[in-house]
Image (cartoon, rainbow, N blue to C red; front, top):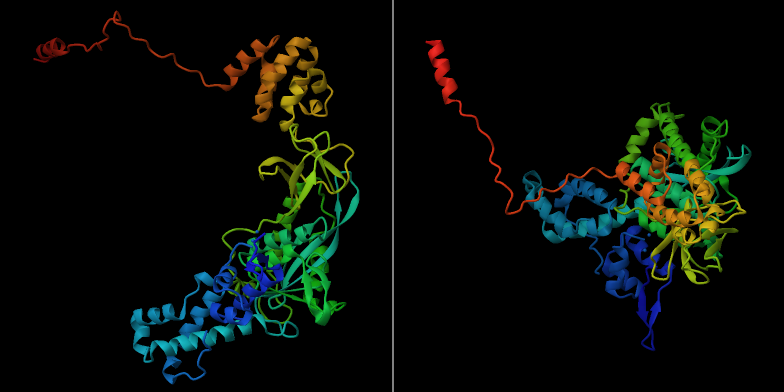
Length: 518
């Protein structure tokens, strides 16, 4: 977690709350305040303000003069265009007033129109920044929709799971009321991880981020509604919104009509593209279904807008020009929890047990929990194991056998009766069952590095192609199959005769040819 520190009366450093960190950055992003203004407004140290205003990765003055010379009129349009371009970038990549003044002077055409001094340009830039930010982030959300504003909502959908049963899952829809474009993603639940990951996939697909997004008071974003309508937001959602730079707005409680466009889009996409229910038996099926859904939503744009006499695709292309640029680093969607392993070195999460490694019984570990996988880290934050996340309770624990194969190989009978044994190719199972106990132990120790390298298929091919009786036979055949043949190196000793290349003398043949030709 990114922390902001401040010394209290006792000299100790006090941690700033996440809301205060977001507030510092929001004064610049959403209100266009300068660093000096934020420092004066909040009483925070200048370096602290600068740190959070310029922060890109959340995965963690004097007032301008009102009077301006009329001589800046011919340049206002150009300056406004530059400021609108900069508005989509992080603060530290925006042009300052001085930079804009210097660029105006450097341009051959614009310099002829520049009849005012530097301070006049600085004053106009400062004033115009505030006006543009206010127009972008503080216009009314309801009624007539502004370009590049979005609405978000969850809806329910049916999917067919691995056992052939129908289950109720969720779809997350992002709609753009101005153009009537809409995009969807299938989610297992309405968790904050699912919300952020689905939004992230849609942002990356369309190539940018809406300026402002309207949500209802979904629990994945809002912890609770406080006095005077203020929202207590989940930390992950706050970080996500700041990382991608959009302004989050929320409906009044029990007022779905305030985001009617996305409410309609939830049913429209479900009826047209998610019936009959998609078959989702694995995480790979979910990824493929979501990719297809985004492509279907794009094809749907090739129809006429219900009011404007133009294709939705053409209108959405106009909206895309105003999107905020994607950050250089994607947001890492996961939460971190501490857990303790049991005597078998398994850790429990959401009624499922996940393996770590034999050397971690009854000790504390860290869990990085995402929507699709769980990473288990030791106290030094080194990765121990990675598992596909299971949402339904499983009777058997989920075991990463690569971490246990070395231990199992030292106990041959335990290996043959372990849950991992049936996952081996049948020809390998048959061979291990029929060889003597002593040979079995040697063979297992030979297979350990092969299994860890993910080459058990090559071992199966050796057993199918060649008659193998001992571990030595297998080792020789496996090397012959998998290693490139090596040429023996030449050896030279003092008694080795000198080797000189033979070059035939062709002068005599040439003389004979000359005589014959004569």
